[in-house]
Image 1 (cartoon, rainbow, N blue to C red):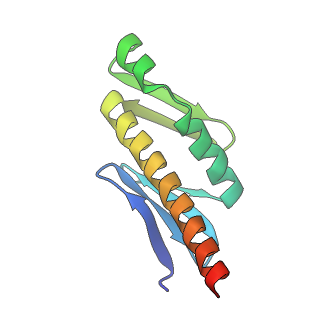
Image 2 (cartoon, rainbow, N blue to C red; image 1 turned 180 degrees about the vertical axis):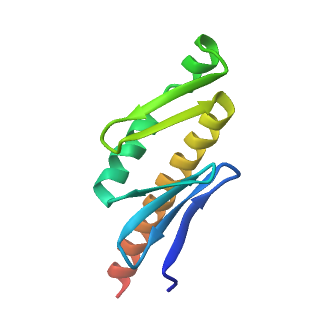
Length: 109
């Protein structure tokens, strides 16, 4: 197993699991953010809760998002926000798939 495994990526960024430090790294637009498993869950939940339709209908072309628990400020275009949501939903799907595979393997063996 490599020291870092990509969980999910798209043209905007990627989420990587660091197997040495047991942390996660989110790489967006050349910036890298590190998360403990608990803080990553909170961040993913916050991003998942963003209503894209609201921002498409009621905002300017650029929005800022502050996540105080992780001390992260992101200034994103609507397109970048869409890519970030895809990154989050794809990562959550991969986590879920990994859990299902792990449960299946333990049941078989």
